[in-house]
Amino acid sequence: MLDPAIHRLRRERLQREVSGPILLMGNGTRARNLPMNHLPFRQDSTFLYFLGYAGPDAAALIEDGETTLFLPIPGDDDELWHGPTPSPEQVGAGLGIRDVRDIATLDTHLAGRTVKSLAVADATANRRAAAWAGPLVFGRTYGDPELVASVIGMRRNKSEAELTEMRRAAAISARAHRAAMAATRPGESERALAVLFEAVLGLHGAVPGYGTILTRRGEVLHNHGHDGVLESGDLLLLDGGGEVDTGYGVDITRTWPVSGTFSGRQRAAYDAVLEAELASIALCTIGRRYKEVHDASSRVLAQFLIDEGLAHGSVDTIVASGAQALFFPHGVGHHLGMDVHDLENFGDLPSYPSGRGRPNQFGTENLRLDLPLEAGWVVTIEPGFYVVPAILRDGTLRERFAGQVDFDKAEAWLGFGGIRIEDDIHVSHDGPEVLTYAVPKKPEEVESLVGTAPPIATRLC
Ligand code: GLY
Ligand code: MN
Ligand code: MN
Image (tube, rainbow, N blue to C red):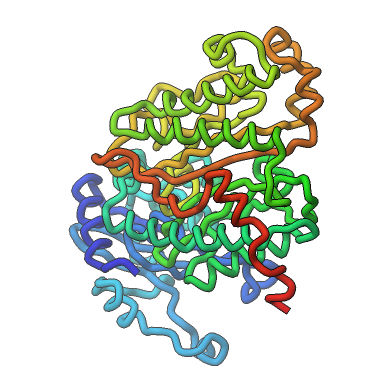
């Protein structure tokens, strides 16, 4: 847990920046079938950021320099089922908040009043807050604009205490990535490797910060299935990161050959993605527009397409038309912090200047961030090269890029899969700091680690 003084200072700044009473809602649990059998709970990140309280069904009123925390009060038989729970006073003492009340009193406490609030993922909490704050619909209305702007400004710039938490998450996640690399061999299942990856996170006090992507079909960008069995010629893509108890996490992707040796074609593509990644990372400096960071990766990948005969023309003409996006169809990264796409519950507000939206071009329409970078921001850099049948066989795209892309040559790459390399970069006064440096990515390092651990089944059962 962070020092409660950090949360208090955050609330004080919030009050200086936002006029009037502020009601922050926490998330509630979601039942799987009946209330006591619920889906895994995760607190709303903004609530956690200002209160440090990770339990469900809470709310906080911040007003006139004071914070009132509203919590569910355990019922008479609660101890029987859940063990002893701390009293509201004990919770308040731990959080440095004197005024802690029963959440059941929130309605009477706020009756007839107007507050500023934010939409959270929990629809019940939004409906409740809407009585005093106006409509709050997750993903559609973000909440009071002044409050939203202040929260974005605060959460986007990471303090040293936050960076320490992210470095902690990175160190744990590096162990988990290395363990998965070492346990990879033909015949192993994606599921066993995903279990191992998440077990190593758990052993070191972290949980997955997002659904682990571990797949031999890396061209399916957000492939959360783990049903595959690895074959010798496969590439394995692992996009996974742990989150520590304070809510801060990392977002790391590595791709490696199941056999322990890249084929010639795999190695050429891997080298290009790594060169693209390093080029983009080098540009993560204060004041640099993020679109330029994206373009640096696009240019390296365009040159690779030319070298392989997959595209014709110059790097400039390819990047101008966006043809490289047929093999790199997403943006080079996004904000990172307490959420994997940090602050994207506020849409593009944290990531684009007002009045300017995403580019209207295949590929860069998925660029999630385009602002000049600021000191203290943490962003991901994650270029990739993917051979996606749905893209290469799309009639409209084939027509549009017929003069630049050799689709016959591209057909010969079908079945290649995908490669992504992703690191998390702190934009600092000393230049780009790679928080996730401890996960191997040099091809020789990756190759020499694959297959060096005993089979998972012999270790687990
Ligand atoms: N893990 C999802 C992403 O990299 O954006
Ligand atoms: Mn990412
Ligand atoms: Mn990722």
